[in-house]
Every structure is written in structure tokens, then in C-alpha cells.
Length: 122
Image (cartoon, rainbow, N blue to C red; front, side, top):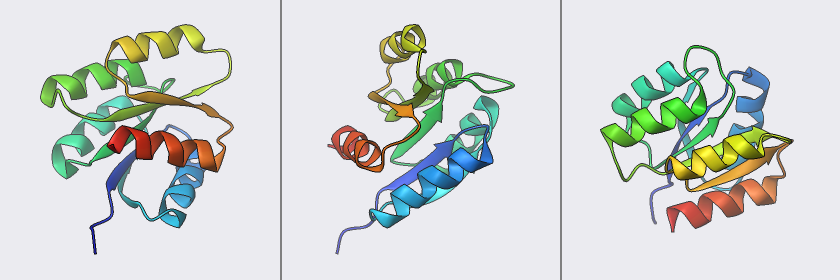
């Protein structure tokens, strides 16, 4: 039996984290931690070393794109999928240029989330 991929869920909205967690656990992924802002995401990443991170773009303290850049200085092979609301296309482009593997749009569609994660994990 293979071990479940370990995922860190980052979003400033507890409701969104809960939704993503539910989608992930139903599909056999293990959610190893959560963070509600970019600074926490960086701390948790260092501490938990997850296989993948789902990262909200708009958050307090440090936004998702800044957190993505920081995480990739810690580990250049870190796999991060950005989550954004509709109408944040410019930010999505910034995120991809900063090294994000993919992005998923809110409100989440479970199959799209799973597809993006499976693709990013290869």
C-alpha cells in the first residue's frame, strides 16, 4: 500500500480550508496541516514538509504569492497549487511565474481540485 500524499491547506477562511480538506480526504489524500496566512504557511511548510500545498492568493500578513516565493527559496522543488476567486487572472499569472504548478478557482469543483493535485504530484 502506498502512503497517502501529505498536503498542507492554506486559506484565511476556515470554511474554505474545511471544504478543501473534505475533498482531499475523500479522495485519499492526507491533510497534514493548515495555515490561515502566508507567514503560518511558511512555518508549517518548514515543520511538516508536505508533498503539496494548496495556497489561497489573498490573505493577511503575507499573501499567497509572497508565501509561494518564500517557500520556493526554502525548497525549489516545492509543489504549490494556488487557489483564487474569479477575476484574479493577473495574480494567477504572477503565481505561475513565481513557480506555482497550477491554480484552482473558487468556488471549488471537487474533480478539478483532485485533477490539479494529481497532475502536480505527477
